[in-house]
Length: 419
Image (cartoon, rainbow, N blue to C red):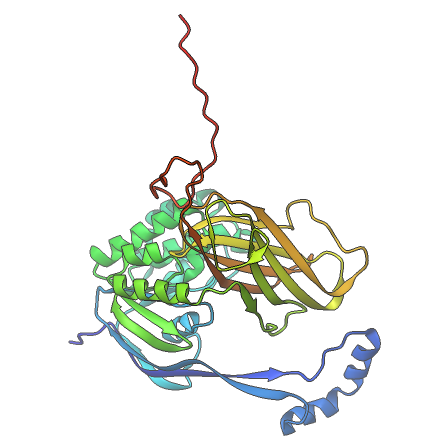
């Protein structure tokens, strides 16, 4: 009998990225490129039109997971976490190495993965169970529990293509957790759900690992969840295993490493396929670029952008969270009043003035996204880190205890009791 539930040996995954020489920016350019398409196909084969770049998403990744173990996989955006889970879920083939798993595997990677959009929620429950190799009577035995956990009974006989992303996640997690897989693989997709459901999912994962002895691989940016759920952590950095120890030690090392990389100014590369993208972002405190400031400082975020198609209404947003992954607040100019350029521009700057958020001393992380009126084009998770320092804001000679990540400016009034 094997002593491992998952055995990963020297996994590597190579992607070959093609960089086009030039994009069409006018209707004439588009017609010219259409007419020259046969020649360009030949040029691609000969390598004379586009440049190819080898990108190793994973390199020499090896580890063993014992049955019943709960392992958190952490790392910055682009570290290879999702690629690893896709390899383990048999969605993509590794370029080298191998992964062996013992038992049925249920994966929850991206919203809607494994669901047929034309089938109803009820039909997809049975479809997913069949894919896992379960018999109808086994699915019948868990059906009511799945529906109850997902909280979508009213929409059970509605095609899932009409579900919101939150409904997708609720049903997908309920199916994955209740159909008795020996191995449960969960990506950051749980972040789509509301806070109450996320808590419910974490509780269920603890239940299936402790009570059912099932193995769980859990990818998350929420360090508090990793600490609370996982006994062991694996830190991926640039496609390699940087650390494999207890969850507490791995999370602490990751947080210290993230804090050390704090920068008030960040340069970005253009994502593949993006028609509008961020080039540069900068944090400011009281009008000065910095990585640290005292409590009560005015915070601003400045972003320089470029676009292939001149635009008057760029859409920009940010999310601010603690270093442990707890989201505090967000904003964007898609759902609130926003200025616009008088004439369409191909490049420009956006300045967000956050005021003086009531943040307690500690380290914080900012994620950014940029898009147009139709879609989000460029997302940079955890792109900037800064620190808030202690300050005696009220002149009382003391700092309030850190009961929460934020203090809140409140007006207090005292009134005498009426006789």
